[in-house]
Image 1 (cartoon, rainbow, N blue to C red):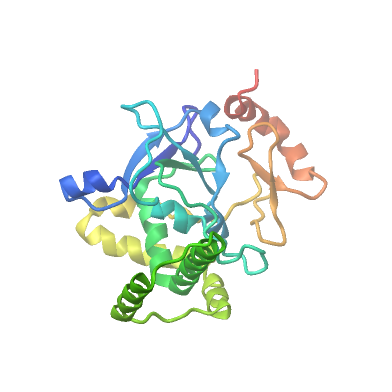
Image 2 (cartoon, rainbow, N blue to C red):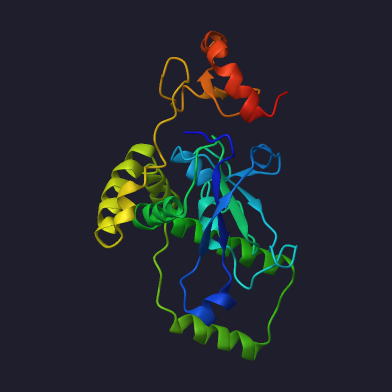
Length: 275
């Protein structure tokens, strides 16, 4: 259900200093109300992994409300990093973290529906539980890029430093190298159907200790044409209304959109900011 006041988003912060002081778990997540004018801004950027789950999440960098400017944290915003992993095997950037930054961000849904912190928590839980090989592969890719960059920059160390590095490497437990094929197999699990099944189980488990979880709706419900209710698929993408950017219609000859206009035009003017 869309609100005339604007959708709810979620602010994400990896403020390690506050976490150490308070003993609270990272990341910090808060409800963030968004005006429709802000929701339509062109500065929002898509998150690939979430989109593959049919959860059309976007992000935007946000300022610290007290300081009135962006604050760079000591650690990377890991939520954003993981949500940005390219999970499309045919993509040239498959298995890469497409975003890596230390700033706070706000997440919202492109379709104008509300996003709540529990949605973000459940998405992360699904990724950590079901897509481990994809995340591990992305970590490998990132580490490889850093190593390559260091080599190209001509970074060198003394013999003693190299020896120390060798000892440190030996002290670390050996980690399994994930192949591209294994990462692709994991990415194949990133479907809205698999997420919905996981979410149903996860919600029931969380509701035992936190009853309010039972009220949370799955964020990966299938997108449907506003007119004929046909479900969107990879081979049948829906097209957004050019006015409000929220309503979705079958792309074939724009028949559905034309037939629905008399019903939709009033809401389109409200959500699209048209006069």
